[in-house]
Image (tube, rainbow, N blue to C red; front, side, top):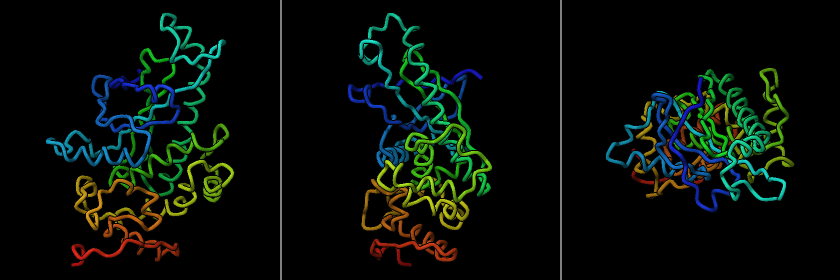
Length: 291
């Protein structure tokens, strides 16, 4: 299969030199082209904000294919040439040479993508979800760019919290010093959880250690936690207590008991209690949600 083409990102000066992975929501592939629905966003909370905004458009979010979760994850490599100058500053007349010099770093970043995918597949397999797959994105004339489209279960985009979790898992390959080939199908779940909770490797301020022990509960019991609500309903700010705007309402907020989606929070708490996991709800009740 040929590498998929997509809308070209317009890099600002800061973005051109930032090496953090970015995400964008995209539509299905048509004639080897996938249209971006959101900009490329680094921050998970900002990304969720843009997805909420899609449902506020005149289209009502109809451009989002709710039969699949489709993300493009983009990363830029930080290779240096022999004079110590970054390729973003080099003349573009010798593009072939630049691609060759960046090849090793692009391959390394691609393996990090695959490591994150293997972690996602591990939890998908455990909980009976459709396995996510990666497809390569054509870098065009940008030797520093490596990008993949991730196609997974529509369950991953059911709510802001699950979409936030999906991105967190996929980024694990960038956040940890994962050995090549890890994790494989025969790696015990306890080993994966222990690795993701490691304080020596955790570079994201406890987002993994604070949530990973609840991933199985969230995935196995999604139908109970979310109910039959549509994606549009779950991304609607009207669900949120105390007129909250939902900016930081992602997986970490939910697992810490600070989500303003109280109906989902209480359902999640009930599931956790039944299986012996401690889960709080710290947000005060809102009268408009008391039936």
